[in-house]
Image (tube, rainbow over the protein chains, first blue to last red):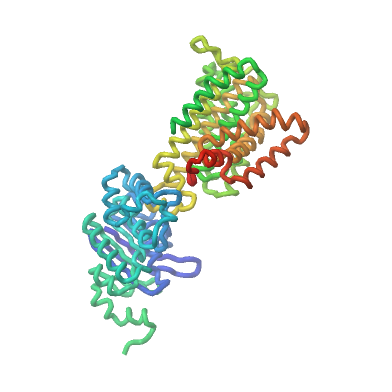
Length: 237
Length: 317
């Protein structure tokens, strides 16, 4: 459903993504890993329209994306979360989802909003201010919730599990699995925690210095010598 | 709109004020002038609060609205009330010409739109065949009688402008309460977050600019038919920008009635009190009053009144 073809991104003299070619199928869950600064978030920014590549192309369900602004891509079915949560200011949790649904999905369906609030365990905070009255886990859940309210077909999750303690991480991962199955979503998940990625994603891609260096099952990828080297910086005997 | 606020407003607007002041032409004239500023102030607040844009260019929309209606009624025989609407449409069209400025933010937007305002003033001077040039237009038609009510009098004019201001405030309120309003309020502090969930933020801002310009144009057209005279320096005067901004900030531009209350308080105080005491330099007192209000209550007068009544302040109105 999503195809990136030789995507190249530069910021000044720095190449953030180098010739990245990648595809994601309907309903597929892809884990995206790599050291800090490898270009993972930049890749999300390219897919969601925040950053424009200097060359290469990308398409979603056969539609070329390069000329589409962020808000049109959201309407086409690409939802994303931000690593640092970006709740809508001056709005309650429910209003965050209402805005996302009205503009992203083009409909008003309160039952669906209630369902999302329940799934993400945000129902008890529905009428609280989204910026000032949420705990970290709830902020992360709201990031997912806003994206879900737009009726996405593809969900880009940028470290939604980072910063949570082990039990919270496990619980949230189960929630994400439930969300994926309920809404029949394709997902790309950025995550550093290898056990988490291996559980959630049947397929993993590895970025290093803007280049895709591995793509396959978690077992194969995490045994790959180049991948291990990119993480540890040591040569493997 | 909360009927506990709306009903007293309507009673004051359509009964109390006309009954109290109908025989006092001077005071009624001042109230009409204050409401004219109130109309622009509501339009300015709508753009500032919901669009997140500080405009120094509302004099342009006011001037365009007044000229469009004056010219259409004088030279094309358009009925005066239709001219009011056309004045609004004219100002809305003029606002589309200023849209390249929407790419700018904060002070840059404010400066760009200030420049636009000047362009329209120059056009009014140069297009002599249509606008009468620097000499202006005289004998602009009055409001007609409708169903036996003569809107051409001072009292009639009062009813016209008070209706325009109330409709503008209700429109502001309706937009603010809608999903659009939620998205617009969220945009200032989290524009990227709104864009990735499907909000075309630039389009929304553009629509707010058009709505704000339309209201201002209608008010400008009203003023032309009320005073029956126009010249470029007057129609595009910076006062039509500065006084409404002062009124909106004084009253509370994030509230619906703040700009209206602010305009009435500021203009009437200035004309009835400060001008008497200090015939020259009475604006100085106005400036001090503004500064005092911003220091005392940055949200303006209405939040203070709401707090006094023990109600919950509209913290994120």
